[in-house]
Length: 175
Image (cartoon, rainbow, N blue to C red; front, top):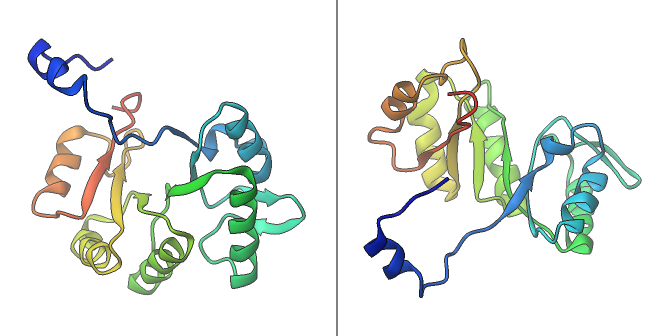
């Protein structure tokens, strides 16, 4: 629950917030991506974060992996459009090397994704920040439980320091 000081709450009460309320497709991991979109749409949500391992469904072969071919991407975009849902984020996913990261960013750019949720290796943070700037796509650090790299809030804060294109996607349940 977010609590604001009364003066701040009053100041913001007349402004429309630019929030995009959606769902992470992993919530529906036991279903295809197409079925997840149906469930998301039935809740009047218009935004989704996809993850790479989910079967696409709706007569589209493969998974939502960033390595999908151009025809599959085209069909997924058509599917999203037919449901009135925008793909705004993608993850949790990381590249193994710079070539993988570039492929991931190119996929995100082609699909109109603005945020990649990830747990990059610490030694990749500067490279990921640079690619995020080049592609104009933010990277949000996710925290899986210990022993993952970003399991502790201090580690996340340290990783964010001086990296303007890397933000946090904090799963407070894991913290």
